[in-house]
Image (tube, rainbow, N blue to C red; front, side, top):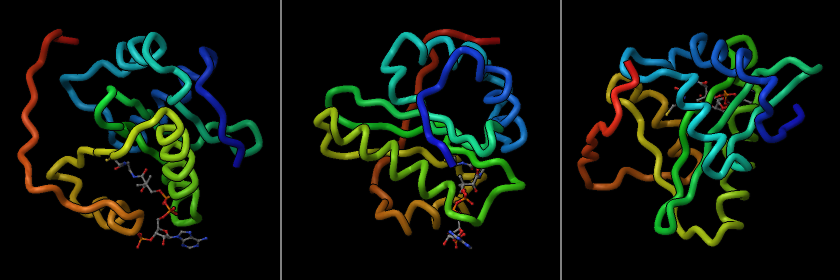
Amino acid sequence: MEIRKFQDTDVSAVVSLWHRCKLTVAWNDPLRDVDRKKKHQPELFLVGLINSRLIASVMGGYDGHRGWIYYLAVDPDYRQRGFGSLMIEEVEARIKKTGCAKINVMVRKSNQKIADFYFKHGYGTDEVSCLGKRLVADK
Ligand SMILES: CC(C)(COP(=O)(O)OP(=O)(O)OC[C@H]1O[C@@H](n2cnc3c(N)ncnc32)[C@H](O)[C@@H]1OP(=O)(O)O)[C@@H](O)C(=O)NCCC(=O)NCCS
């Protein structure tokens, strides 16, 4: 798998991957998420390709205190072959290079089985509640 930075021409493939991976939710517009990311650390938005087909994505960021990972996805037809691990390892290495000391990831309560994947990659459960406040309604 080739891992490279997201390019404008990837937009429809990446959004379709997120739909296939059930990462899109009613209150988020994936196109607006892509647009926002293009303006903020776009170098940490990565895609994975096999024979030019986009099969994986991960969106990373560092806010000066913590690193964050979003939209980690591997096409269902390509799972259990280590591609998700390659994506997370690559984005972690790139986030670390920015000077970041710790990465957080939010896993939806409805998607807890994915936590095992993160545990295998050294993540632990922090005893915190994650609170959120919407500033812009996408829809
Ligand atoms: C999470 C996700 C990205 C993992 O992708 P993946 O490519 O299947 O990941 P990997 O193959 O690296 O690892 C998955 C499993 O395959 C195993 N595996 C890795 N390489 C393997 C190989 N060569 N052969 C067989 N199994 C392998 C791993 O040990 C791991 O085992 P586990 O399921 O017991 O944890 C994928 O399941 C996904 O897109 N899920 C939907 C989106 C999602 O929920 N994202 C997270 C949002 S927080």
